[in-house]
Length: 305
Ligand SMILES: [Zn+2]
Image 1 (cartoon, rainbow, N blue to C red):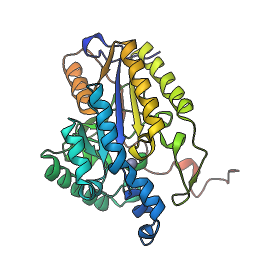
Image 2: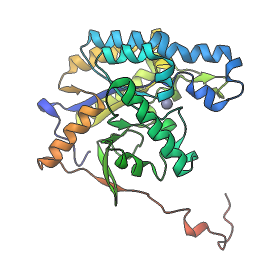
Image 3: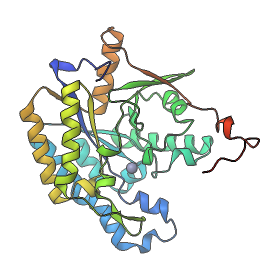
């Protein structure tokens, strides 16, 4: 089913990473800059992430002796230093998630680079080291993001969805390892509801959402894949969801032959097995397109769309 499964450490059947995007209220300021301060209920819902959920999640993962990757917009690191301290004290990785959750593919290249570098400066100042990995806000990786990842020396990206195992993103300037996820593994479609942010979907029960995550795990375990959760503390850190999360972690430990790791550890391992000739990744050359496809250019007959 998977043509090039990664030889995971210790004979593990699959690799598992619970990753958390601690967006806090950055997303509200981005969406409603001039009125975010008046949307108090939405602010309280989003502040639940750094204030309540992050300490709970760090305690939960300490109980299982597991370390995870937290993606933080750098503005959130400046705004919520206690959450940063809690994450670092718990031994977790902090990775790059923009400065204010800006969408790279909505920026001009020079603007994208400005925010990208500004976020790196904050991460370096508050953690003592440069980030190793990046996830574009809302997965909105741009046509220029790979250039900036290479230029700034990051080793992995976790924004794209092109495989069940790691693969390489490359262009003329270099390459980074892609650690892919997909929407079924994101808690947003399962749980997000916010009138202020324009999402009025019915939240699923924890059991329904975790049925999806568990099915993904069983398949990845069977065929040697990479299971990456893309979860938000203000959503998945809510109490009943954390209870379901603990049950899933217990199930994974009972099943055994699972490598629990941070994304930095997974990317580093991938580089080692590549250089030792033990694994050949699939390669995606970017950009996929230089611009809009010519078949639908101005001279083309109108299509019914
Ligand atoms: Zn985010």
